[in-house]
Image (tube, rainbow, N blue to C red; front, side):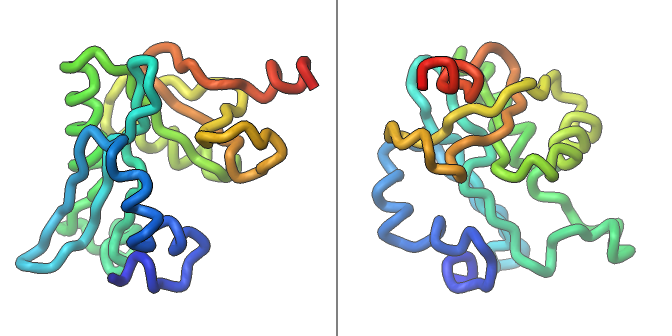
Length: 164
C-alpha cells in the first residue's frame, strides 16, 4: 500500500504489523474513496479514561494533499471535510473526549486551521503531552502538542519534568 511504502517519515506507522498491533484499540477506522481508489484513511484510537485520539494514523494520497495551494478548489479535504467532523461527533455522542495530536510544534498552524475551518470547539492546550503507551519519557516522538474538546488525562511534560 502506498502509505507504508511511501517516502515519508511516518511510513513505518502504516506497515501491516504495526497497524495490527494497534487494531484492537480503535473505536473505528474510516477510508475515503474516489471511484474505487482509497484517497485517505483515518481512525479513532482509544486512550482509555474516556478519551480518544481522532484523526489517528491519518494518511492522504499525495495527489489530494494541499489542493487549495494547487488551485484545485473542487477537490475534497479529507481531514477538514470528513474525518475530523465525523470522528469528533462520534466521540461527543459517546461521551468520549476527542483530541488531536501533532508531533512537530511547527505544525501548530495546521491545528489552528483545523479549528478555524471546521468551526469545531477544539482548544490547543499549552503543554506537550506524552502520547505513547510506554513509560520511556525520553522518547522525543512521544511528546506532542494537543488540541482537545475537554480535559485530557495524559502526562504533561511539565508534570514529568517535576518528577524527574
